Length: 338
Image (tube, rainbow, N blue to C red; front, side, top):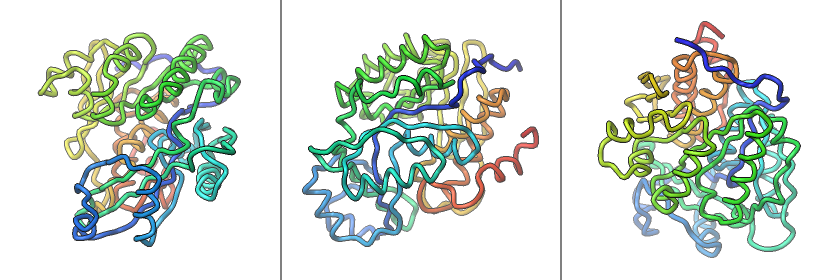
């Protein structure tokens, strides 16, 4: 199997653009969800008043910088890669928590906070005893990202630009995506996109398809997202349609592992079970961390997928999306070529 050639001269491995969200994780019983009329396993968007009301009823087990792209970038930094993140917070307590936490992961974060407007975004992640997540998300300041917020020098220095699909709900952020993609490609970098959510894909299908066709080199999705993108009820049909649309497409399938696709190849990667499942928060995000880390280190695609699977398998054995032990040591224990 041949490696795929990649640019080698940029100073930053991956720069990500996404929602800057403080993840607030808490263990709750099913009865609490029912009392608050929350549908178990779903992600719902809430307003600031609803966010404050729910927050007042819980005792957080963990508060960390979050959001899909931020999780992936922090994972890359924990693996030893050089990562940077662009996202918008407010100058408030949660904005300070986000900033300090993502920087403590080793990621570069230089986007200045807004001084007015909505407060910092937060996601209340309610973990029930069966490890299912129910998420209530207030997007707040994160949706006010715009092209002027882009650090062009960092994008030009990056090998890979990683885009989070959730931000497509903001027209200004969508413009920022396109501008950043053009800068990255013109500088010799590659563009990776995470589809993020099947409902998000439904809302912005044409925009995603255009991005995939014209800019994306590496696409990350789960089974429901890729089926939504191509409006099909079967994974097989979606696989046939995405093949060759971009350089590499990665489809995660939960406990069934993942599928890596190029124009001429399909590689099936088994899931890695590294312990009891505690919380599935960030599993897909950390898979992307591991895959991109392998990719940047010139590993073949099967090895990239295995590293992604190991990172995902480890993160679900703990609470939250920041590995509590040395992620790179776990990868090295399981991938002998590192």
